[in-house]
Amino acid sequence: MYFEIKNNALDSLKNALKNLNYEIPEDIKLEFPPNPKMGDLATTISFQLAKKLKMSPMDITSSIMENIEISDIFEKVEAKGPYINFFINYKTFSRRLLESVSDDYGKLTTKDEKIVLEHTSANPNGPLHIGHIRNAIIGDSLKRLLKTAGYEVNTQYYVNDMGRQIAMIVFGMEKLGLSIDEELSKKYIDNIANNLSDNSLNENNLDNKSDKSNLDNKIDHQIGQLYFKVNEYINSNEDKKIEVDNLIKAYEGGLSEDLDEIFEKAVNDCLTGVKQTLNNLNIIHDDFVWEGQFVRNGEVDKVVNGLIATGHTKEEEVLCLDLEDFGIEKELVLRRSDGTSLYSTRDLAYHKWKSEQGDLVLDILGSDHKLAIEQVSMALNLLNEKSPEVIFYEFITLPEGSMSTRRGVFISVDELLDEAIDRAKNEVQKRRNDLNEDEINKISNEIGIGAIRYFISRLSPEKHITFKWDEALSFERGCASIQYAHARACKLLEKCGNFDLTKEKLNIDFDKIEDDWTPNEVEMDLIRLIAKFPIVVDESADIMRVHPIAQYVQDLASAFNKFYKSEQVLGCEIESARLLLVDKARITIKNSLELLGISAPLKM
Image (cartoon, rainbow, N blue to C red; front, side):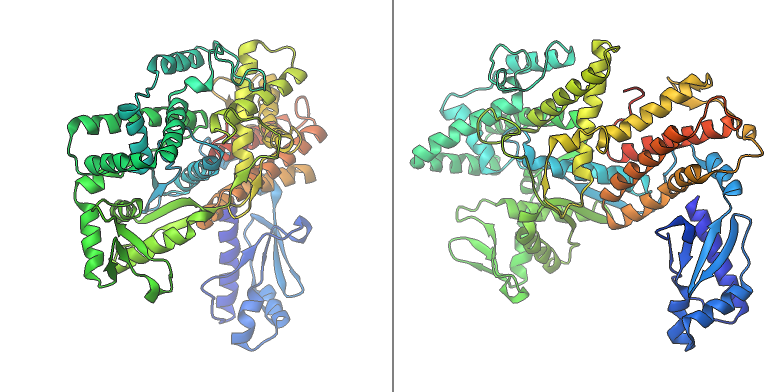
């Protein structure tokens, strides 16, 4: 609805300028004043015109005010100094807003643009750890946001199947006799699926081998342990590195179908565990693209030959792209002395391929990749290919002592999720002794996952995050407070007798809105925020950031809670209007959380 309001205000301003024979600026600036008492929309158009008209902003404003006409969606328009402020007629506007909010509220018009978004792309040599989680959550939330904003989005996980880490895993299996216990992995999956065990994390059960859901049994964790053992062995037996190099060369050259199968199975086994973790976070990729395909189909060689043809390469022991002429001191290695490719070379071929799959290539990368992406972008420019848009993020850490690790090396995402759910369960049990075990587990899962996703989404990617449990799981200002607002709305609507909880549908017609309903201050605050949602979606998609959505839904939940505590709904003289307002707030909260990949519980 705010799009309609803005368009109405713009039309009024343009008609006034036309009557005055003033040139109409291409971009008339409209903004939301910090205080609603100053109006619902304000424009600084008089400042925009002052230089060209050689008039003072005050005089321009006076002329516009003498010629402006407004539609019935506005109550009045006023001049505050050189500013022009529009005030919404909430009696008219509120009814139109409530009628416009449907189940897909916030979804914008389809755009003729496809975005290829790569995120997570962790090496398949063990479980996802806390260093990967911000990448995954930013990437998935952006996918949801951009799709809602009308873009076609394809999310990809780039699988490093030709890296040294995978060759080391295969070396461990083939040369050292190490193996994966697939039966234990299957039992782990079955136990989780059947909800047979307590996944709580504490110092007493982290290493308990009898624990039916012990993470050591999960297949990606088993592979991580295998990799750890091989790495220790190689460090103590450096002469064995040549055998790993030979495995890399043989796999890259496709010299043995049997070896190919071993490599592919190791990678797929690890990806099975990674996908389980991502799925627990409500994250699903559209495609998993294996880097090996670009070696096998000759695209890597084409890229290397194309860069050689630019005249910017040099070869001594290895083939390098010299980027010094372009202000990049560090050269980009393209090929090893034994003729095998590097991750960077394969990444170039992948980016070249991605640029052909869509209109925009978007990468989510840690801030430590800035030099690497600068090199890749320059190499792509030399090949006359599109370079990617990149969102860099700072890293996430846990306060010292907030969690114990199983290995003392890193904290896996699985451990973090289990810890969050366990802490959420403790909070739910304190507050609700009337719920059965299934209900407690479901709500705890929704709160725990939501806490992690929201805490990470709420800050811009450029800011470092220290994950704090008390803040993340706060029922006052954390994600739980937002989820609680949704559950509170559902409970209130269910009491009215016209709300189908299973379908989440309120059966009240808009013509039942009472004629004498004129929103009060608390209602207007809530209405203003509901109305802003599509604009927040549009502006957030434009800057490709999700933290404005996180702040918006926190503000919306706060406004709803204030309304809930201060205004009677059931049994009041304007019950239908207020029930509809509750329902539209509920829908908007739910759709906002959906953009962040967070569940909106029906009860808490």
